[in-house]
Image (cartoon, rainbow, N blue to C red; front, side, top):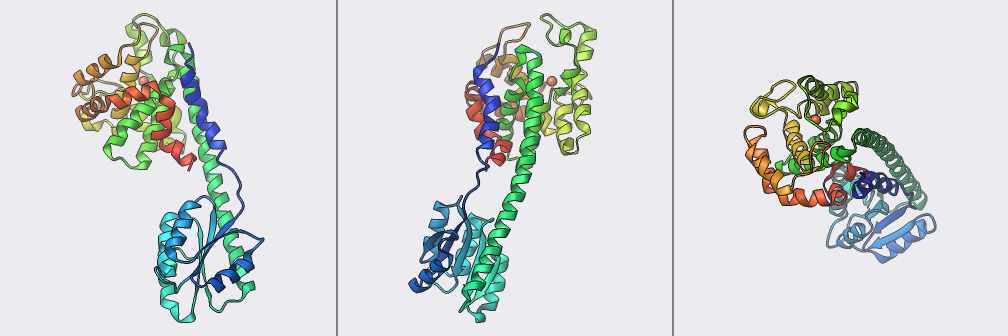
Length: 368
Ligand SMILES: [Fe+2]
């Protein structure tokens, strides 16, 4: 039984990612309070670039914010009322760190220049009065640097996208092995990141939890279909085979360097807070945080999904069960928080696609 909502969920990320790789014409922002200088600068660059102008720093920041995805380079005068050029470029650097910044200034401002180089990642300064050809050359070099940096980050983004899509495909392939677990890895991932975000974990750890969520059951690929999809209770021997999957998951990903930090969350997602879980019988905080998070998300999804041996339980019943098992099966702090945020979890269960876009670190990085 396929779930249309989840199919959309699985496909939409890639589609949205490919829509971001659009080449754009270069736009430069010129900021100068003297109208004659502004006109001169516009004449120098007319026809080569799209030009935006501002007559002071505040206006410049506003223009930059309104055109944040278009501006490649800023040329700013230093001596201006309201806000000096260095201050403007410093602020602009917070808003758009990748945009190339050039300062026009008098020779006597050497200390200001040093300060500007450090504070606003100044690409170059031009002494006034400037030579138009020299300025054109500097701007051209700046645009080349911008292009190089953009293509480098696009390559990194492409690699990350490839990595992510591969992981997602593996997770989907696993879920497809058993029609009853369709979308399970994706939903466990979603619930895990929603829960983890409540605990002020940094972006790296969130990304690691997300990847671990996608791959947590990957070792089930090695489990025979007859055991994986058995409608009745597993025999002791079958259960031994089933219990091998976290270690198999870890073995499968251990050869991939990028996934080393993901391994603990994958290997230990069936440990229990009271130490009665597997594979290592770890207890309490000896169980990695990511594994404690995934354990709750995994159990909630298992309970609220129809399986070959029983029908799905209601959200409320599943939440009651999580609450009951706080301190025995689950980390009590994490379980309490999961119960507290259960309305969000319920909404995410009903609309996984929308919530995934909102909560996923990987998705945001690939679409920024
Ligand atoms: Fe599992």
